[in-house]
Image (cartoon, rainbow, N blue to C red):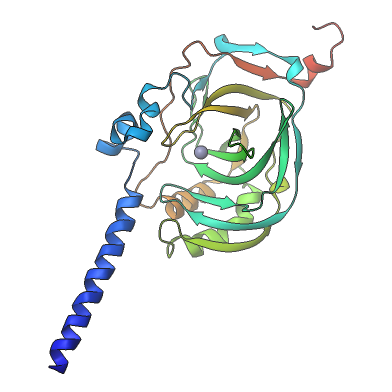
Length: 273
Ligand SMILES: [Zn+2]
């Protein structure tokens, strides 16, 4: 009798564990970057994701000269970031640094957008004149009524990136043990450590680059390619999307959208209207 009871309890636990693992696997596999759940199918996988397939203002895009217009009136980016408590979250396809209570703001079009999280894509999602760089960071800002502004910074191979260097130890140590949606405390992280490197930036209106691909997102792509070491990208890829290889959505049609370019030189010129 006792043995039977024990066996039953073991069996029950086994079923429970299998169920949990099943759920986690399903969550991580909701969408992917290749095959039947890859980017070209996202719009068909779920009703809530149909914008991924039907949207006309999707991201990322290839930033090319013919779509660019210089807009001095955009003005320089007003950032007022502050160090704040952060955690590391594994989203299955990327790992993000989340500031639950925000880490300061950027000021865009008369509105303050609070910095909520940053995450990386490898290779980069936005391309410049068709060129795809090895890495892109997205700094995601939101208003209380859920409007989104994202700053994207591109990286080529070269000297190591100091912000990633600081985070990397925690990342490689944690991510392998982290199940999707698991969250680990990082302590105080200062977003001012993420260097833009230029005041010039491109701006256009697009979408989230992952399902549900919601549109109306203000994209700000810094017009300066920064550097990251090959080791850092390799570690990030291993830690973040072990087995996936890449987490970049292909570029989407611009459908007549204009990319605005802000450069301080034009912005400061008295002769330029
Ligand atoms: Zn992103």
